[in-house]
Each structure stands twice: as structure tokens, then as C-alpha cells.
Image (tube, rainbow, N blue to C red):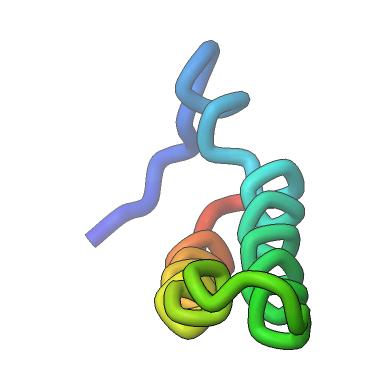
Length: 65
């Protein structure tokens, strides 16, 4: 099986850097939601946000640089 490089617009879309930053920001937002003492709603969804960010980071780590 050969790997071809993505070209043109699709190459810019699948670059790792911006997606990794977004996944990291999502994880950080989930941790902030977990640690804040003011809203039970934010606390309730914090674990789901952390999981989504982590799964996103794992997927994005396979994108080309």
C-alpha cells in the first residue's frame, strides 16, 4: 500500500498543528469546567468534554505534519 501526499486545499485542511491546538484547548476547557466551583452544569459535562478532546487529539496525532 503506498501513501500519497495530500495536495492543494486538502493538504492545508489536514495539517496537524491547528487541529492539535484545538484538541488541546478542548481538553483544557474540560479541565477548567471540572475545577470551577460555580456551575453544576459545567461540572456535569466536563468529563465528556475532556473525553472528546482526548479522542480528537488521538485522531489528529495521525495527521501529516
